[in-house]
Amino acid sequence: MSIPDNTASPRVRAWRMSKHGLLIMLSLLAVFPIILTISTALKTDADVTVNPFGLFSSFSSENIETAWVEGNFSDYVLNSFLISVPSTILVVVISMMAGYAFARLPFPGRGFAFYLVMLGLLVPFFTYMIPLYFQLRSLGLLDSLLGVNLVLATSGLAFGTFFMRAFFSDLPIELEQAARIDGASEWQIFLKVMVPLVSSGAGALAVFTFLQNWNNFLVPLLYVPGGQFRPLTTGLYLFLGGRSIDIGPLAAGTLITIIPVIVVFVVLQKQVTQGFLSGAVKG
Image 1 (cartoon, rainbow, N blue to C red):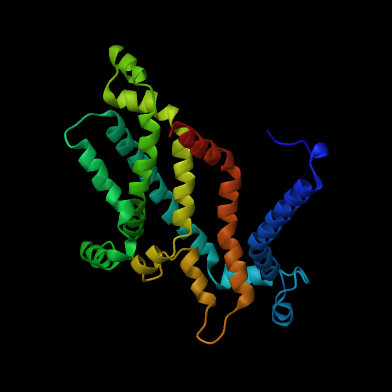
Image 2: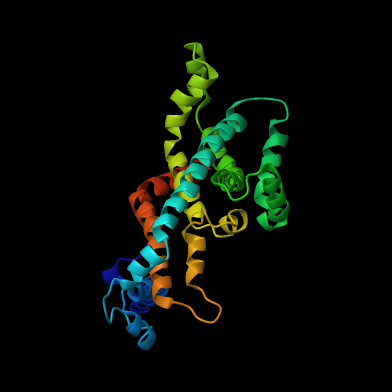
C-alpha cells in the first residue's frame, strides 16, 4: 500500500521528486531532436548557418517550399502512400486469415506450418535481400509498386500472423459452434463472427505496420532503384551532397516525412492502445 503524500517522509518525497526529475529530463532529451528539426525547418538559410541550435530564432517557409517544390516532395508523399497503404492492407488481411486458420481450424501439420511461418521472425532481412533482388529482376517486378509492396507485405506477415493468432486463440469456442449450428459457413463465421471481435487487434496491427512501412528506407532503396516511385525516406538523399548538406531543406523534408506518422499515431492512438492492452490481457 502506497504512503499518502501528506504523511510521506522527507526521504520518500525527495526520492519521488528525483524520479520525476529524471523522467522529465529523459523526456526532454527524446523530444529535443524533433523540436530542433521543426525549428530548423522554419528558419531562414542564413540563420541556420549562423545559429544552428537556436530554437525558433527566425521564421520562414523557404525551406519547406524548397523541399516541396525543388525537392519533389509532393511526389514523394504520394509514393509513400502508394507503398505503405497497399502493403499494410495485404499484411492485415492475410495475417487475419492466417491467424484464424492457425488458431481455429484443425488441419494436419498445423503446428509445424505455424512454426515454419514464425521463422520469418528469426531470419534477418539482410540474409536474403540480395537473392530477392535478382528474383524480382527476373520476374520483372524490380522498380515497380507491385514488387516493393510485395516485399514489404511478406516481411511483415510473420509478426502479423503471430499477433492475430493470439487474438483468435482466446475467443470462446462456443461462438463458432453456435454459428455452425445456425448453418453458417466457415467464411461467414470468420467474417461475421470472428473478425468483428478482433477489430482492435487488427487496428493495432494496421497502425504498427503502416508506420513501419512508411519509415522503411532499405526496401525502397534496393528495389526501386530507378527513382520513379521513390518515397520520402529515400527522397531525403537529394539534400545530401558529397561535401555539403542543405541542412534547412533537409530538416524541412524530415518534417514533411514525420508529420503523417504523427497524425496517424495521434488519431489512432486509442485503437493502438486498446489492441495491445487487450492482447496483453488475453495473453
